[in-house]
Length: 54
Length: 248
Image (cartoon, chains in turn orange, blue):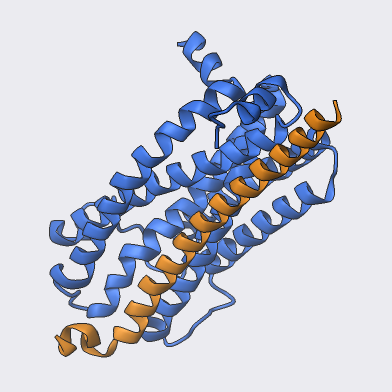
């Protein structure tokens, strides 16, 4: 098992690439969701305030 | 066909359809990525020259390919927006930029990490592939900075579309740099006959497809947000948000 993870001495390079990919893809997806929630909430607050005002 | 296209390009219709489509792209995409990663890490035999370091190809090539594809989507959408003034196309262009920047950054990082054991250096300033990919990252940053510096959305759309179109030249350079100039970077591998054994190539193709589906899902989600923001003063957004069911 350990030999498999060491990858002939290249383990550090290989695993760091896969880990970085995971981090960037996860971060990008999370940012997209967060921005959608924020935009939606901002519009909702504005519209509700407008409705109350009317 | 045109009727279907126009219907899809209508913001309320796209907003509804994209919510349904996004998970249908993301789920198979993630399954394919997980399968190809497992194959690439543990099943595929090591390369006779590069040893196990070659396994980086399974994340480096898809990210590099998406860095160029995202830019081409951005530029094409910008051009469609300029010519046919389709509202949705500028939203697509704006949404593609941050995703493309992310994949370009990833391609540069994984390439640099792969270069260290293979070429003995993290970075080579004279290498045309590396430099043109770095310029691509700066083009993405420039595009996003230009958009955010102009308050008027219509003006921002037009100016950024022109910048995106000019930058297409660099995408062509990124793609052909390994053929035009002598480079540390290896030449075409994935689609060239005799360069890769099928055992190694098939997981890479699955990974490419998985990344493309995931990219499609990410793009749909971001375009959805962009459409919602741009249409925030319209009746359909008001009705959707104030309806008891909501529409998030």
